[in-house]
Image (cartoon, rainbow, N blue to C red; front, side, top):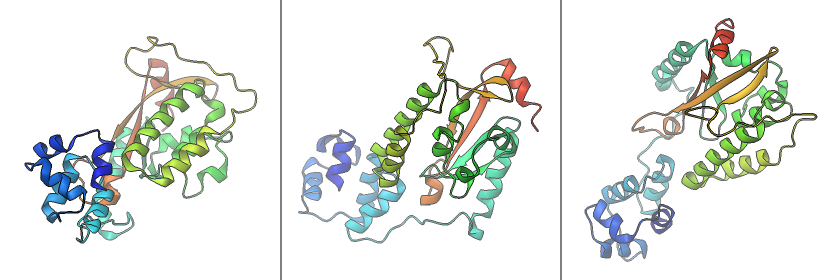
Length: 253
């Protein structure tokens, strides 16, 4: 497992050893099972290989140690502070849309503006566990309203492929395969975005309530998480890409 993570990160045994204040010989012995690492060494190597928190627990178990990172349900009372903080962040981002998703892109929370943006999405797509990517690209979801659907889908599929490369999660692979095979909505006319039309990022362009809106997305995660659940949470916020969009959404809430 250590070798797989090292090769995935394209790091040599010597480079990993230097980062972890060890030797290439010791790293080689660990990979071949000739030496047993200490718990501290497992965690140090995992940190320098940027192994996700969930998989660090797996490495510890493989080395004969108990997991050190908990995985706490968001409904647990110990998460009250986290839930309250997330709600404050979402509310503060109004009137612009914002959502929080877990490691499988399932919706955890959303603000009022996002609820307005999802008007017209089929009810079965919004039933828990509602998946943000499925809602976006399903023919009965937001897809019919996204003007640059082809570009936006490839943009998010590429992000999903990067997540798969990091986490090697089967659930993400299945989600990727499902979304890439979604048919285009009937009669949809795709309007691409030429490179250079926007000076800093690809916008999400969609038609809502008879108006064309454009948003720039940004993703935030928690620094130095000690819990698997928290490590996999991400908050995606959408900022107006032009004054017309800003003016339109200010009237939503």
